[in-house]
Length: 360
Image (cartoon, rainbow, N blue to C red; front, top):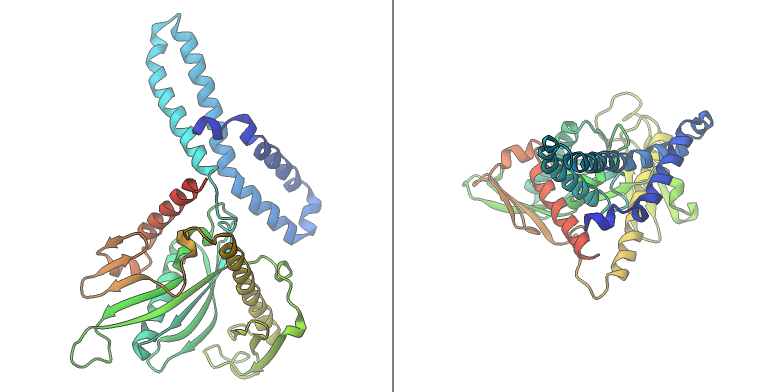
């Protein structure tokens, strides 16, 4: 399979595109268009691992051919052949994996929303735990987190929280590639702080996640479809944030989607960020509908599971996390809530890759 994928006919287009991107990046005029420069840089970063592996594979194949030829005259070169054969096989498999079908949004940044569900204050406290978990995970990866909006409960939990999570450098495997499986209902089992009898309760919070478009213009939004309300910010922020009507609520009338942003200092900044979140939600809605239409009659893949389904349980008494989609279990809940999500995300990613290859 590796030979088929790494054949010249399969990679010529990537070689040509990569060379074209290199030429564009070296052109000073590109920097006059920040949006285009970001697009070119992003695509260049996506292709870089493929090009690096392809170059290493080409060199290893040349070295293997040379070693085999020299071994015919000098047996001392024969000892190098097995190692080079293994290197070629490993690099060919790596390139096969890199060229496997991918989610087109994998390099994108994200908007992530956490909402409390049934369970009152306990659900809101759990929603805040989830938000902190994602913030700590982002910090571990050097990503930037911006809290766009929060609705805080009486005990300091989150009735709702909206986060923007962005990578600092373009990458083939961006924020979406890691967090795209987090959308759904997360269930918690623990003794709430409001429980006086020590009984374990079960409550839930929902996570919604969308790829964030680089520019709002990528999604066409008719201004006549919007109702924009401004009001005084209620959160922390000091002068200029919670003393003026700077918070913005945008309602998209055709879909009923409501987006709020209150953490920027000006009404214009809040409106711009709210428009980005709205664009992300509308784009995700359109893509999910298109995918649902295309998937009629076939089984859903992991990232398209119904958001109303329970995807994960956090069991505090047993210090256990269970992802119900792939049967993943681990007894390190405390570490997971501190941002150590990589093991479960790696398992979900591997299952997704296997599903994509099987669908080929």
